[in-house]
Length: 93
Image 1 (cartoon, rainbow, N blue to C red):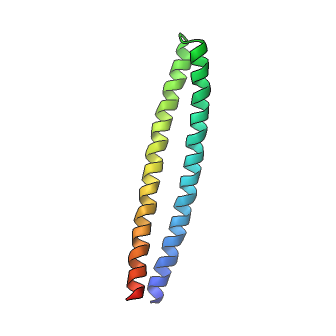
Image 2 (cartoon, rainbow, N blue to C red):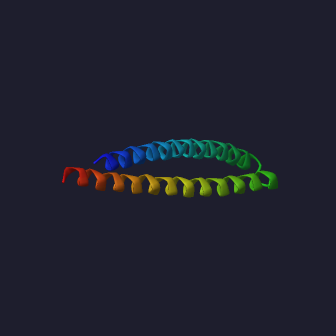
């Protein structure tokens, strides 16, 4: 039982760390969305701006990467949750 408790504690530590990373990445994603919105406003004022179009493309690239990172972290949390559930079932038996 002690080994399972240690595993459970370690999984909770890992989960807490990943949730913290997820929170940071969500914050980054929201900031990118805000900055991209500002660029889109500037593009609406000057649609021929090659510099703004390039900047907007860069934001799109960064947003896609951030979304991939968020999805990966969410999968990691789900995997840990499954392990925790399995350990809980073992402790009940």
